[in-house]
Length: 181
Image (cartoon, rainbow, N blue to C red; front, side, top):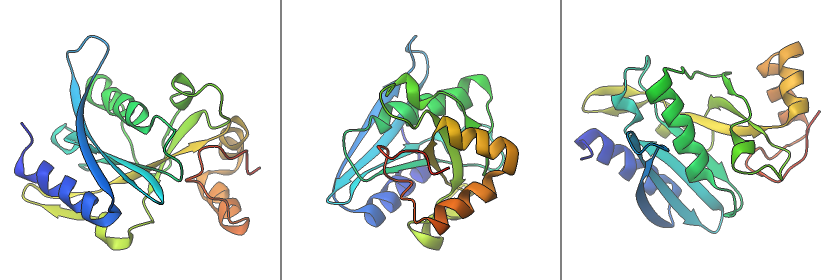
């Protein structure tokens, strides 16, 4: 059962992203662990957010956001799998952390193979640091990156890749894009 903080988080994301809204419970392969995922659809595409990751022992408390300009990407599967790695295996996320090959599990046909966690930027301060009953959470945006971008990060760092994105006006919410480097 979602807590009051979970409900407030889902309502906040829904109000900021707009469009139609659905919440579904996703289970791991053994059906021993689950996570609620909010999906909103509007003319701008699809946004997904975990609901309940904040309840797992993770410092700082967080939730994951994913955004796509198209609806055909299986964001719900990708975001729930990332949450299971955090919940079950103790993986940590923070800005700059990469979950390698996670996207390719669901979309081997696209060039974006890995997830990079960055501070969200689309909704400004409203989702950067969110005050809930249990305290603050610090949501992160998970964006896809290519093998070439992964290599670039290993040599130059995440901030350099973000600079390339900014200089070239790369839409990181386009999950069908090619490499930016």
